Length: 477
Image 1 (spheres, rainbow, N blue to C red):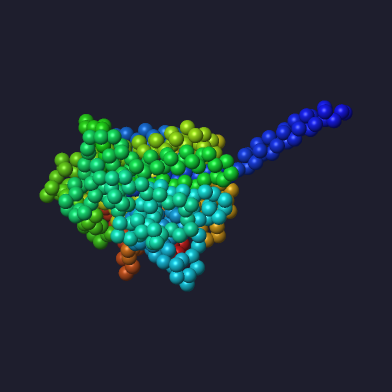
Image 2 (cartoon, rainbow, N blue to C red):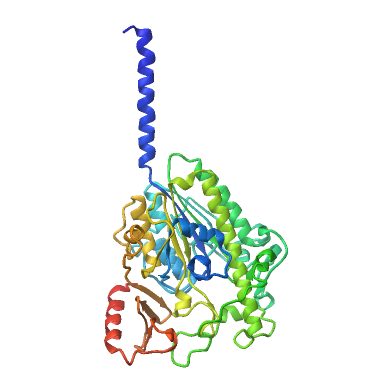
């Protein structure tokens, strides 16, 4: 063959090989991860059975993924729950849990295992955090949570961002109301609010816009997969959302509050301190039914506002094409009482504080739209994401991969362990047992209408013994 003919043929052949190699490389590229954390979100979503709630975007995600209807957090408070999510470990029960971990790292005296984002980062991922992912939005300490010398999660993120817009600093945005209002004295701040305006008048509007910007940038990086976490603040107190979201609930008939009475025996009941620190205009929702309904409507409006932010993020993921190779996880950091057991808030070891939504979607999953009734826990998310991405599951992770359930949603789960202050709790398919530090036991039969209003520990000593043994064997903190 002549040289002038050979060269073009050879060039074409090499081009085909190159394109084939590129396609092969694209085929084995690890999936991206998009983790969306929503603060104080109980399973008050249409896809989780709350039919009066307007949550179209999260519900659309549920139709594409598997919804874990019996997901339980490991602690009923923001800081320790996020500690478990982000480390794959049971941990301290205080809101400063991650800062304590960072202090150990700084001192170098104790061996500290990598966090989930750090693990993915060392395995070739670009890691980005926007909003409230760890306890402090933006992941910094100091008086206003913006001191760059005090990092909540060292070595975790390539970028950890918290846009504050007119709220001045992350602390201001965390408890911010419309048009830049910052909490100074909580008693002077309304417990709920609905102002005229678009989504940008509350802090989550700025968080979402930054998330969209980061997604656009990450989608253009063809060299590395990304692990991106976005933390939406609402429906955290104070319950603020643009008025248009509240108007959706104007004519809605709310369901009755289940078990609204204060427990008579010993429990982990509390006096709703976080809630009651706000301006309640001298009203008590436990005795004022109209006020209680008003609070619940504003909570619902904040849920719908958060849902809209989720919708924008998922729309951008699809617009830039990254959805074709991205695992999406939507997670509520704990539950929330809206009058059950006469509690307004979290921080108990009752079902309402510990039960939160979890949805997992990945491209090509075979059971899109399925509901799993398996008992599972937040601790399981870290090993699950490793399993789904092909990243090595670390030996130190204390949870179990949910891949088997994702592939067959009728598969059985296990149990969920939780803790707060001086008590710990175990939830099985049929019971919840709470063990106090001094040995006192609460046992509730979840198959009865009485639920967590009737302590049956004295009637079933064999069940108590069995659950105690599981709790003591597995809860390593």
